Image: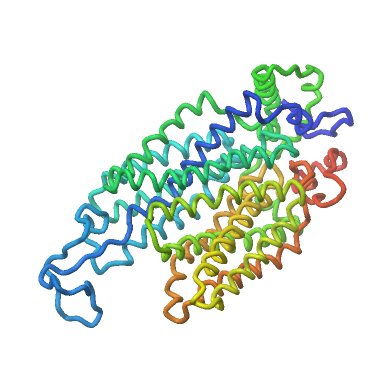
Length: 505
């Protein structure tokens, strides 16, 4: 155990020890594979409603020649509806003339994820990253399988909400990913793990093509998630989180295990000198309150909230509006998902060479210009419109990825996952609103793009209000977090703290 006393100058920072490990050695390769699989499941969970509750044409049995299925002005009631696909989700739950029930599936998922992040974040900070990953991963598979047997529409909706709320391991797995590698290797390691999102999106379209029946489609994508049971033995807890909880012996044991697996010798005295800054053992609400006592961290929170709202709104909005593209729907979905591959590689290279702030600002501003220009491109030049659309989607992938990492680097360890989850959760209002943007076309075909561009531009402006980071160590305390953007995070930030003031921890 360790206590929050004055830190000796001889103390060794965890980042110095993690720097001795190569991310392509045995231990971190195993962690990379486990993280990759977790991110695949996130892609499968978050977008499967696109194929499950897809639009199906239908018509009234009494009027076979009419292509008009519903009319708001009609007083005639149809006794029976005929569906082009009688085995579809829409046909089974008899959703003819209830389009809002079909689209509600996606809205409920986004709302559930928004609410769930407020639970999963604190769970991760309290119980540990590993525990949160295993619990949410297994619950996701459970609710998904149960949903595939649903006999009632509203039961299906309830299971959709629960799965999104407490059945997605992406948030704790992401935080664990950035905490188990050194600062200099963090970006490359996350890039390799992040290909799981791309692979998951492409796998989703393949599953949908191979299993057109919506029930078997759900079972096909959720059954593999029970592999999270193996994470009990295969996944290790974050040493950084363990240190903030005063469990230095456990953190040292994990580091020794990793060193042994990689055939690396860590000096015993080096591990004994490992600094251990314990977070206060107080209720979560108090920790959050003390974090918000800092005016700098409050400002960062509101900026991050703008980033997240803009990122989810524009990114999901462009995906939804891309369905108007001609061609095979499965192939189109896979192509949209594949855009994330070059985006992942390019954004990693940019962040390694140009820190965080400028890349995020430029991706927001360039994305804004592309979206604002899109409505004014001549209709007789469709290839230019498609090029602008794909470039805009690429920019939205850029600023979404940067926002994800930037947010986690601006807050201290003991509330990092909670603050990251809080920003992500409240920012999901963007993904809830995004499905409604196609309705704007009734007023003007270019209005959705105009809105996307305006939101991106405003989000870019707020980036001026936060410090730049990249080479800084992850802050463990409020004091260290406030020092971000200066020459270096003070490694002895607790030397002069007031033990009666918890906000200094």
